[in-house]
Image 1 (cartoon, rainbow, N blue to C red):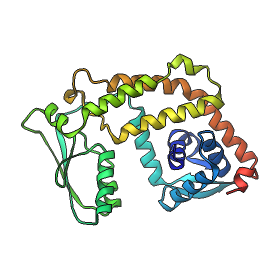
Image 2: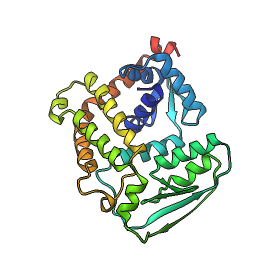
Image 3: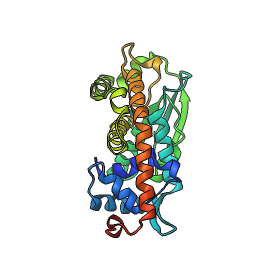
Length: 270
């Protein structure tokens, strides 16, 4: 796991219930539990500050970092997608978006990555399409300096055929089946202690979060009848829930210890 992912996952999965804030020592210690070196964690935190995701904030004697409003909005949106039990009802319409093609290749690549994360597929040229209207679309494209025009429409041909042509459903289905094969049984992880449960849950959620970049939570109406995505989602949710109490307890203990001992070597090294 990359250091940035470890920090982002920590803030998105555990820190909302702690006021979106953590002491430096706590962030370093928790990332270390997931195999991330302290120096890499500190570098990741510094970059997230420069990117507007975190801000330095002292609480009492503890020096730490709080998620900015931008980060809270994006992390909360990602959290909803990660733990959604099923896609929302679909009205049969598609959201079409035409993005301006100005800018260098690097900017165009960033725009394409953002659109893909938000569930849009390239229909052709500068036109993108999704079965859902993303509320994050405007802010995401504005952050890249890209203008756009969007509207909703209903295609005249089979929406399932359109979907199959836009997304690699074969590859995505295989990825879901592979994920399911590696999932532990909920009963086998429910007995793990806090220190063992936290890295297991972190790795589990981190791997599941990758589907946010590949799967736009397509409506069941446009998916093959043997689609594995929903069944695997239910398995993931069961395992994640089985790990949640012990993981949350571990995070709370580490953060509390870091606040009470702000002069720990981990923090002093920052």
